[in-house]
Image (cartoon, rainbow, N blue to C red; front, side):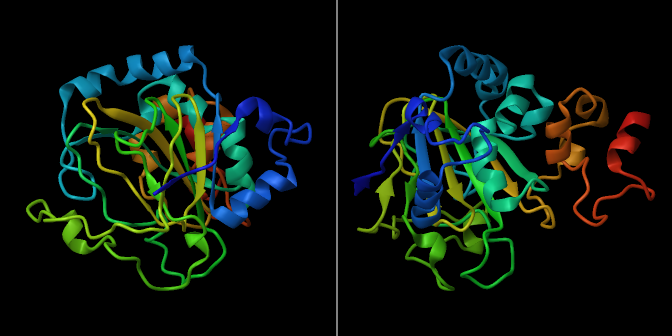
Length: 292
């Protein structure tokens, strides 16, 4: 299994034309062709420490996944924007939004945001893509973009996400070892890994990097054969007309939402998709937020 190409943030910065939301064509072409990009040295050590501090209580509590998809040796933390300001900052990070808005437009939504902590002994996930809930035949116009923020390095041994470059362009049909309804069962356990592929690579990245990939890209969490956990954050975005995976209006209470930046508010649903999707009692939802 090969290793994915990475780029440093200092190099990627030269591929923006002034506005961080305007990606240089060469970088965008690689994103469109391969379905993913990895850029190193994006987050500072101070930001990573803020993330760890904000998650310490939830990770120490230690609830593990309920099924094969969540990972029975994996901690997952949801409703991130309700927990700390650092997560809202990452959801609205200009480098991430450059790729997200480039594909989905400024009316996109935050579909989900979670922390995934793979503990030693975790097995490989089934193959899936993050847009599987959108019932439009493939190949299709991209409906989502996912971002990974590695808090721990993603390595050969600790469960680095495995991806199939270019698979976002595939038509209908599943790879070997795909996600099935049985993978959401609390009792069914996969006996072996049927998803090994020669065309898959491990998305290796240091802590503080950023990985962005298309919602139609086939990928899976790898097996953690190391002696330490592997923590990442993953905000996932969808087109403004699509239903988000996570109900952000309930996940982030109005009192908390009112403290977020205007862009973060828009991403969790206090916004309008033209001409008027998302209104509340006939008015813009942000007006309703101000009266909550």
